[in-house]
Length: 454
Image 1: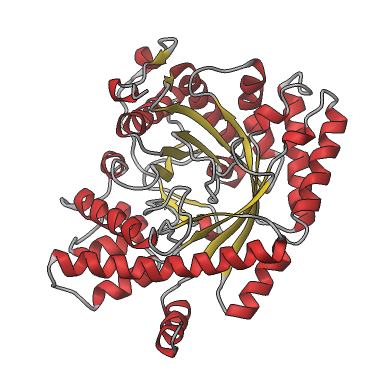
Image 2: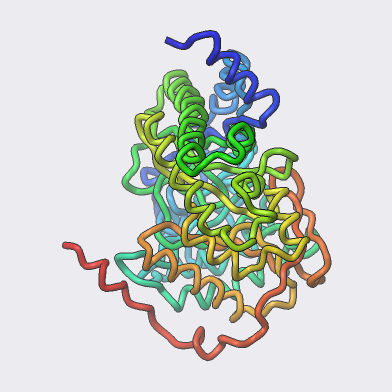
């Protein structure tokens, strides 16, 4: 039974501590849309999405009204388009046509984003997958709601360095194609190692081929709630600190479980997972970096930051996993620079560098996320940054990702504006020494020895 104290406590979290459900994401399989006729494929995709997702936004609004829980985004993820378009698409321009169809369908049903313009190439690329990857700059510059992701490596297969090299150029081209808007296209493009099939968060969401025909996945938030709880135990030992984070994560995740269950019931779609990640926003009081400071750091990036983040991530998982029937996706703590006011302040103060962020990704949920870098950064340097992050994911058997934005025409000391939840970011310096000879080697980095578990 829920008592009046718990009701009041949740209301307080929503009204004063920025608690929200960050997204309800409807995953839709497009496998039954496949045909070798491009026009028919586009028609099938449009009809499937607009039929399955027609009630998604209305459902989210009804839950918001009934329970008073803000649901910030309603989103769709689809089966990786490199698979769906392989038979019909003879060129990159054909894949762009599918991107425009996705954009049109997403606009029709009123969602914020649609993810799944994706390719999974951790061991090699088919001609169709390469064509989709090469289409990404044009696809993202000619659509508004489409998000793209590419999985470049895994613990089981190693790292596809040919794809890593290619993605350095694709990110540069995407930045150029959207340079009039601070290279915003790169904010809708992420590369992964060990990408999960059920991630509800953008830009990396896609509907894995192991999933049902349609599924409801929910992503919660709550950095402000955790930060407020920790202020009440300031100066206490690690045991009290950890217990406080666990209990708070449990409460936050219960909200996500409630919303997921209601959305599943109202839409007649199976409940997939709750992703219990702490997802920050640029709003004051909604920052993962502020939690690290409350734990005891002067600024995110100070010595002890990686340990504090590891503690936070682990306790969030321990508390959240007890609150939901199914936990999945990324689940933990996000450290996007432009989407977290505390991270922005730490970069501006000089305490947080790209190298320190890379170290932090060893213990957090994702990776180098929403980081603005100088617009003249070479493609090979971007590929080197990607390769480093893929290696962390591969060796540590975890999901890692890179979403860097080379902002064309801007350099260190300038600021990029992305708007809304994407926020703004100071341009961060990048190590200028070359890795070109390394990146230009062909083939793949083999899987680590501990991947052989069969």
